[in-house]
Image 1 (spheres, rainbow, N blue to C red):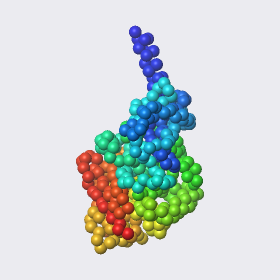
Image 2: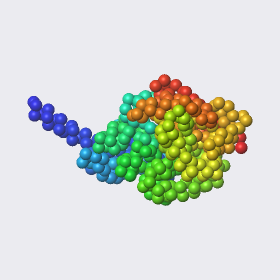
Image 3: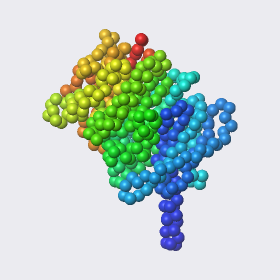
Image 4: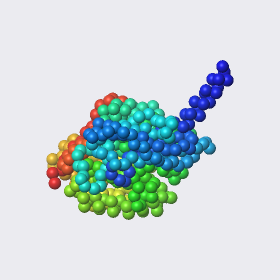
Length: 431
């Protein structure tokens, strides 16, 4: 009996190595496409089975797509195989259910919406809802956001997730086991919604090795498939995601120059396209503006003093020249909403209120870096808030952005432990 149980246990363990895990979605650089990424621990074939649901004129037949995989050694002299496949010809008015596997061992069923970024006519300028946050890990603090985001995901109240750096704490830790645990923890959400990421300082280990292997972001002529920086058009918004670590690491200066050149071209093109995409929203991990705690020594304020000065020198004039409406940032483990700022000065409109800004004449900065880090409340709200701050909080949570149309944009920040909205903002443009 004991021998039989041992053989069954071995068989089950071996079978488990075939089953897909860490399933997550991302948009490609082309419209009507969705990329699926997953992991196995045996080198088996990559397949996706999918079909449209809740879709007119659909016969309900399954379509099979062959993918490919790469070998990755995350640590502890162990191998995993990272699979990816692209589902194409999606109908934006449909939902799709899918499985990933090899034909014998399949994942659970997942469902995603067929709407993707679009780059050719006819354009879809309908409203867009996106989840935005930074700094999310597997520890107890991260469970608040996981639970609230799971509830919201069940209601399909958003289209995609934008994670602005610091994933898992850290992807490479314990020989990559922490990265595996993180991607399995968030799978119930990110296997059903596009999960668009950029690296933060916690991803820079071994030249961003784990980040580059585990996440597949849109390719462009400058990023060489690294996923460090990219942009996409969705609804009335042009979204830009960049890697500010490149400007702060001595060994990344050449990559920083490449990113800046790409960013100049991207923003200039977006600015020429404002009639179609009136909102330009950028984001990255490190803040350009956040409140210094002047009650602490200057050397203890690097995250809000030294580094932001460097980044403003690299980026602020570029944002101002190309009229970037909104910049989301993280890294600080708190939440801070600011007014429009240029050269460290508030740029306001006489009609502005606590929760509404009219025709901002410079970029509005919002820090949402407290989805649930592993370091606790180590960045309390500054007791010496800058004059351009309109709301600040230490609550763990995330935000939701709703771009309704060409004139109205809405932002709300949620406290995950309190299960409630704690802040909101309207940005209104009538010209």
